[in-house]
Image (cartoon, rainbow, N blue to C red):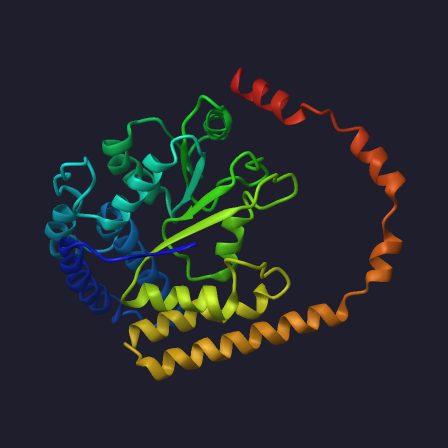
Length: 321
């Protein structure tokens, strides 16, 4: 489910100033891949987690911080309205409203980095309280397991904020709602996020929410992911290697301020490539071989050796250690 958003007036100023500053900064980077990575990291933070943008900028240039800080502060410190909702950050406003409307539903919220997790938690907690689980690679293994167990607890937090590391090898099927709070430029990364809850053992239809700014580059990126590739609806497993070029092409089009013609060429080219790749996979499938390879008795004997409460017992052992 895509959620088109309009930036607040304060965000409009930040985006206008911030994008020009970012483009000027990356113009000095010769490598297209490095330029795309640097630009993408800053733009995604600016669009989704502006509070994280300053931490990213500090590692790059003091001048960059000086140019961005007043506008970021205006967005993140804007006073709440009469309903207690954010007024400076329209994406945060949507998330707070969504959480309040679904008080009994677990919600897994993905962002790109540990910096973004910490920043989003800081600002989100002002509106929904401190009962927010977090998961990112910088946490110790013990703390990661405790956060997952806390989130799984029916009496635990409604929300977990996670980076791409979240859920690797862990059971998140108790949750069936996921938010792509920022939008990765790699289709495989989007699929990996969705795959944290859309997997064997999931008893509900998985709902994926993707907030985005209705005008500007983010809308164009979402069009590639949603319409040309269909990653929000279908798996890209098996064709992800053919889509590695997408993030670099997105970076080039944004950096070059490409027009509608160039973007349409990317939409059409990607849609055609995805269609051909999926057709090859379908033609190469051998249902007879697949059926012949499956031995129900052997599968049942393997599954019978797995204790029913294995994951629960492992969590008890780890969290009680």
